[in-house]
Image (cartoon, rainbow, N blue to C red):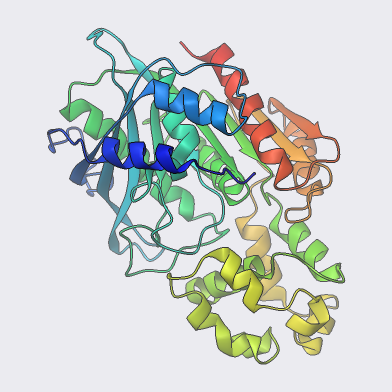
Length: 400
């Protein structure tokens, strides 16, 4: 859903964001290897609950709950690593309820954003881009919106798009938020909620999985809502490549660039894509262009975008390295301890609805507590707000 901002609301927001206040920058209880250490914090001002309420009303958005608190916004830079274990810096936004109760203990609400290729289109730069995390703080959570490795301040590495490693940076953002809270006398309870849509849905599932499998001594997930995500990447790829045309060809290019960068196969874009699209990839994914601009620069028709030999090999016995990488990075075959609620429109034209069906069926068969909420006739765009509203109401029944 596109939100049409009123000009006077944008002006008010700018005024809010420049009404900055001081904050401490020290953290505490950082991990031994530095991951999650807070490097810097930039206060970005306070957004009033009245502004949020008016914003929702002006844009005909009904989430089912009303904002209660004004929200303090902070842009944070923290330590993380890339897929080779090399130290990197990453960024994100933290949203804190402006509450006078010193005894209040807040749950964490980490929201993973959808596909973005322009580095500055992130919450640490523009806080409204983390709107659901912002809204969560207005109803009593500490909202977290990670920019993701390769976006925001992270200019020296490519964003690992639809690759399970991106979850490691989210874990470090959650660590950084806990360290920030500790250093600023903000009390947290033991709850952690994870949510995301589209790429964010995939990252949410990957983050839930890696926390329970590798960091359960540090975090306990309360619940997660991995919405409209390509949890079974092989099934998603098979579906896209079998279509006559695909309205989001930039997604395919993004995945290809990621996997070529990480796996270092002896391949080039020309092995996958036809000219002139193969030659455009590096320029398109240089971090300055939106995913919409990239989609417009690539062919929608599958047989115009991809090399005929690639399609022949893929649907035959070839491209095993690529297929194995898709399987390796899929996040549907595991057994979560915390409950999961999936949301997905069954007419989604960008992320195959069956990815959620497969995840539900496999995780349920493994003994996990999982439910799929299907939005009948819902497209990728039209299902987003319905999904966020449903997940937020579910979280509210679990929140302390």
